[in-house]
Image 1: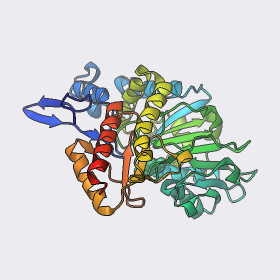
Image 2 (image 1 turned 90 degrees about the horizontal axis):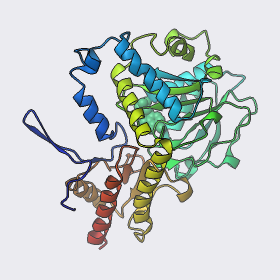
Image 3 (image 1 turned 180 degrees about the vertical axis):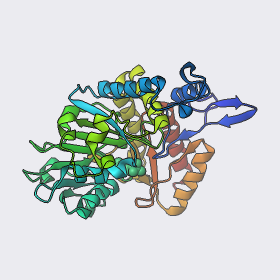
Image 4 (image 1 turned 30 degrees about the vertical axis):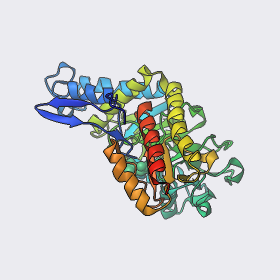
Length: 380
Ligand SMILES: *Cc1c(COP(=O)(O)O)cnc(C)c1O
């Protein structure tokens, strides 16, 4: 590798301890913008001149209120949504959303319709099935989830409670490059791994949710962006904490929210704004993905992508090597080159490079360069 210091590898001396950072390709929790981490560090001991850290501050304090509401406003602004939408902060991970959505909106008469394109979309459907209110609208399981369903494959009930799909399949490395047309049916999407990675016509959606630990912050909070008219449909026979309108009416402060996670998400939203918003994120993300997919495509079959080309994810690049032994070697040697977290999910095997917003272009270049070199040395 080159000897010049890299943007994302810093040597800092904190209290006499030297830290070295790597290019972190973990799927989630995942890499965050270095600028954000530094800011968090700098203001940790004395947050907003309160003489205490954010994690010691009351969720009812003015200093916290400011960042809570600013984060909400920035998310809506980035998504180009107006005040007919609301941002909610909910705990329990994206996995609790899998249950809350059918609980609040579906019934035996009006089923939740699901496109199955990977593990998480299947898990979402599973919860609706437990409640007896789910229907499969499409599935690509027979193709080992190597692509997402096409529009012409979606079989959506005209009276569906909603149509649910997972926009980016973190494990298989596939992503929808179209927004499904669903007519009058409310559109719901799990965007856990591509939220705020690119502009979309978000007005087409009734509800979007994302566990923030992939692309937007530390684990502990889910961002739900929903039409107020959808939130108002919350079922009032449900327990308080399982209803969307509880979070709406109380500004996500009915109980103690995960203040630290929300604080960091707010900083990441600011960082996205300061860096040109979703359009610039999308350009950068496309470029990073292209660099790695090009290596795969030009490798004469040494690297085999899991995703079919028209479903390729810009967030998670999945690929295999000729055999297990080479895959183990790849992971070990990658680490020697400051490339961390590229081992794939056990269901797909091989490699997965997660290249969320915070992965600098340089990280993708370093990985691509390493892949080229590794192939040259090992093609046999
Ligand atoms: C990680 C992930 C989930 C699960 O999120 P949890 O917060 O762990 O429940 C759901 N959907 C997608 C697309 C994911 O990437």
